[in-house]
Amino acid sequence: DECSVMRKGIKAELSKSKSNLFVTIPLTKMMSETPEAFTNPFSLTGDMHSTCIEKFVVEVSSHPRICSIEVVPEMEFLNLEAQWILQSGSQNYRPFTDAGLSGTGQVVSVSDSGLDVDNCYFWDSSGDIELNGEVDQSRRKIVQYTPYASGGDWKYGHGTHVCGTIVGHKAVDGVAESHGFADGTAKNAKVAFFDIGRKFLKILKLPNQISTVLAAGTAANANLHSASWGSSSSAYDSSAAQFDEYAFDNPDHLSLIAAGNSGSGNTANSIGSPATAKNVISVGASHSYGQDLTSSQLSADYMAYFSSRGPTDDGRTKPDIVAPGFSILSAGGLPREVGECDPESI
Image 1 (cartoon, one colour):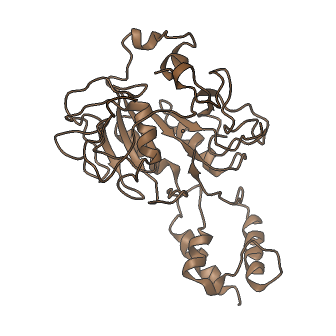
Image 2: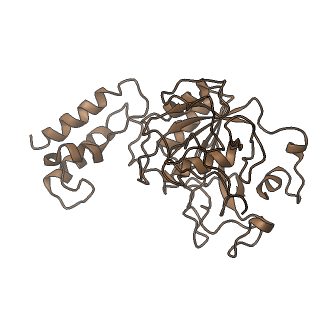
Image 3: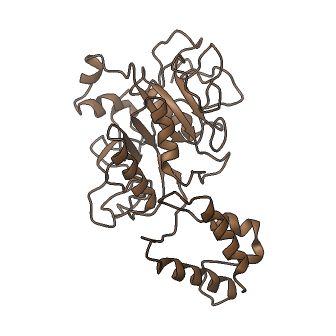
C-alpha cells in the first residue's frame, strides 16, 4: 500500500532491537534516508505521509505487548568557593578535604561532548589514552575513553569543562601534580569518559539503550556517573526509566544528572528528562560566593536564573540538590594545543 516504504523501514529498525525493552524508531534519520516516505510526519494536515504515521501509532499502541509510545526528545548540553559550599555551607570550612577525602582511588564516569586529553588538568606524559573504550587504571587521569560519537572535544568544549569541575588536577609536565586555579572537587579521582558529542553541534548522539553508556563506566570501576545534559521534557519518559532500571540492576551505581537550563522567569515544572528519574540525584545550579560572584549573582543561597525548577509532571520534588553552577571556572579545552594550562594570573 502507500505506506509500504515507511513500514519496511520501521520493521528493519525493530528487527535490530528484538531483545530490548526500550526501542527507538529514528524517524528523523529515516526521513533523511528515504524522503519519499515522509513529508512532515508531525503535521496533522491529512496528507498521505502523516496518515501513514498515524496508522502506525494506532496499530502499535493497540498491541497487547506494547506498554507505551512516546516522542523521544532531543538531548542537549546543560554545567575557590564552590568546595566549601558543597562540603559544609560554612565559609572556608571543608570537612571532606580536611579529612583527606579528595577522590583518591575512585573513578567517576562522565558522558559529555568530548574531553581534551592533553589539557594539563588531564594530561598524562606517558602518552595519550587509546580512544577505544578499553580500561587502563595506570593512567594519571583518564582511565577509559569511549568515542561513541567522536573523539576529543572542541575549543572550550562542554565535556572538558565538566570533567575539570569534577576531577581535574593540574600537572604541567603530565606527571607531577600541583595546585591549579581550576582543580576539581575530587581532584585525586580519575575519569572514565563516554563521548556523546557531535562536533560543533548542540544535539547529542546517544545509544538507544542508556545502559550502553553506564555499563562502560561500570567496567572501569566507576559507581558514579555524571550526565550534565538532558531535554526540555519534564515527563517521566523512557530515558528516565532506563536510568532507574540501571540503578535497580546495579545497586551500587548512582547517576547525577543536570536539572536543566529552562528555569528562566522562575518557571515551574521545567526540569528536563532524564533528571526526572526517581533513582538518580538531580542537580540544579546555584549562585556562588565571594570572588566567584559575577555582577548578576547574589550569593550561594540563590538559584541560578536559568536552572530548571520542579516539580516533575507526576508531582515529585526535583531537583534533589543544588550546587554552584553559574560562571564556574574550570579546565578549558584547546584541541590544537598540547599541555595548555593556567595563565600566570586570573
